[in-house]
Length: 280
Image (cartoon, rainbow, N blue to C red; front, side, top):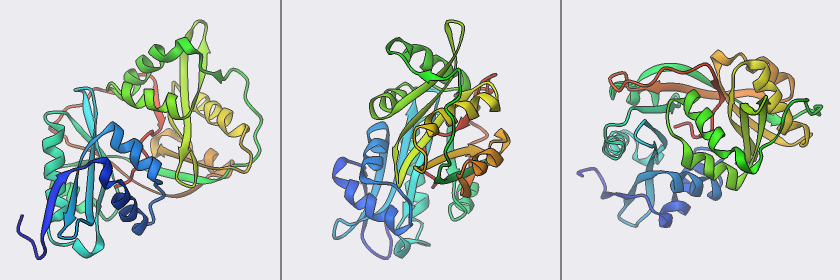
């Protein structure tokens, strides 16, 4: 790879976590070491390193079975921008994804590159965060039970259009999950886990906005004043309510897909909050 300085592209391994954390901190991203470790555990990736072994670029590809993959944590050190490194990282990401349909969430800075690479906008992601106001715990929502896991995964696949079993296993291990039941069946669910400055709620899988709000309120009700984050699509209509409970709209990104890689149509239940909080 010919550039102004020696750059090597190598497989992202655990030994690169500390360098990746430094890179994201330089961009004021909130990801802790533990957040990078989770992303790396679920993904394959590539890092760019300079002659001294310093991490100067990252990208991760999170596969969901053979259904699709998300590209995330795309960061290029400010000193290396304008040299084509971002495109090289994306080309490696494409190779890792194989024939899977691709999704990503673009920052303003990354948007021009992704458009050149054939991605098209499919929605707007709104990031909400802040100290949550005191809430009453809603009725009809409860903690998941030991035998619920297969039903959660089936519901998620119906909504997201891909098999995210590995992600859900990780959320169960690292966080907690609330569910809404309809008779003996699970109608909706939402996860919460430690992330960044506090905790993040997502995914939220629900048939309507009212149920999505109830699931978020269930988690928030036991954490008055805690710093929470929820990333939601603008089409969900949750933004005004999230702002009302203390989670201000502080930014976000553009959801994008590769149009030639067909994705399954979203089903009756919708994804009201994302699980991957990487905007890059």
